[in-house]
Amino acid sequence: MGKKRKHSETEAAAPAKKEDSAPERPKRTLLGWKDKNEEAEEPKAASASGFRNREKVLVTCSRRISFRYRHLMLNIVSLLPHCKKDSKVEAKSSKGATLNELVELKGSSSCLFFECRKHKDLYMWMVKSPSGPSVKFLVNAVHTMEELKLTGNHLKGSRPLLTFSTNFDKDVHWKLLKEMLTQVFGIPKEHRKSKPYHDHVFAFSIVDDHIWFRNYQISVPHNEADKVARGGLDKMTLVEVGPRFCLNPIKIFGGSFGGPTLYENPFYVSPNQIRALEKRNKAGKFAKKIKAKTRRKMHELSNPLEPDEFADMWKDE
Image 1 (tube, rainbow, N blue to C red):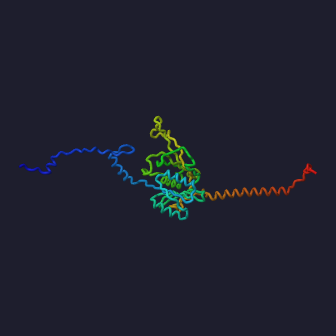
Image 2 (tube, one colour):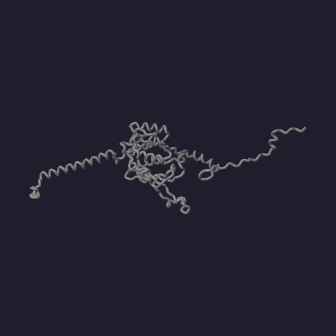
Image 3 (cartoon, rainbow, N blue to C red):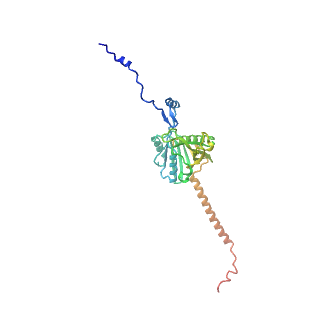
């Protein structure tokens, strides 16, 4: 009888089977097909940089806010996909501690708090939590999207381009405000609620020591004949979308909702002082009228008219 072959010999003699499965397809992205080498390089590049923008903004307001200012807040919420809107907070002296705790609970790093006083004046707090700094603004010249009804339009959630006037590099406090505006209004890259392209512009400009905000759509012709090449800025136009508002900086604090005062605006005049001055001017006008009337009466008494000799000519006898 012949000897049985060992199991190892049979395995060695068996021919190697070819893989019947198709080769794995590369991953598809918005920019095309991605190779495995590129996929392996991406995490290395991300780990090498070591920074990822995880900015989150909490947007809230005080109680008894007027409808116009509430619409402005909702317009800003619609422009910032990385923000979180929360319920109203009582505007008292202890609002700082309450809001700091609320920002921590929501996992946010910044806060925009709209505080309305006397149903007339709107103040906006821009705060970096928990260590500061924080800025208090008086908001003027408010025009919401519902009021303006402009022709501009852009996709909700798209990332904006931030533009600043050259005045922001003039003084130290303007540089600080520019950095805070960049961090709060700049949408993080690859945020889950944002779109991966730019189609509108946030414009911040300084005029008369006030920060003026405008929002413009980048309009590009889409006809085949007028197709814009890369870098063809001469054919692009800006169409305003809204909202509009003006920020008058009052104070810059070193902490979150308080702390040492880093800067105080010397040209700031509170709305209460303006209203008191207007009332005083109106009261002065009324006092001038009363004085003029009394002077007229005294003049008439001191200079009586002579009796008219023809006064009784046509009287019936």
